[in-house]
Image 1 (tube, one colour):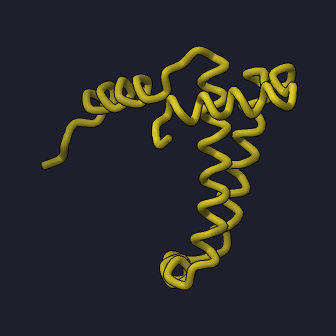
Image 2 (cartoon, helix red, strand yellow):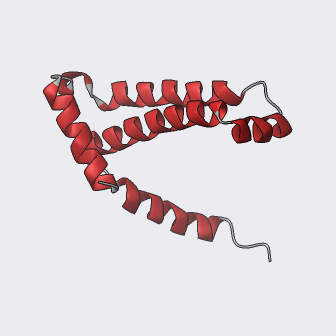
Image 3 (cartoon, rainbow, N blue to C red):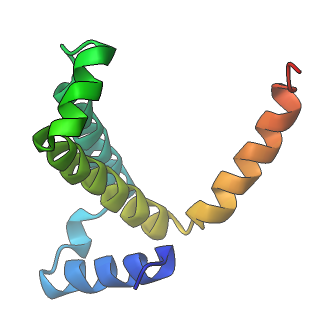
Length: 106
């Protein structure tokens, strides 16, 4: 499955099979999400933009970033699910609000 709904369902099953729902509170999931975002940042922290571009072309950095980005996405989808938020609807609504807040410059 390649949809947010499919991912959400898979995460529910994964958590249920391990009896993790008890730990998947909004607070705990938000903290885990923050930690994973920190790990994503750590992969890039001391590299300048040219080095990042070169490292992405080489491959290993891309793989590490993919793993960390996946962790961020997984925790975000799980947090949204536990909170009853449709993350795609919320994202589109946020873009619409931002279009008003930040009008085009051209």
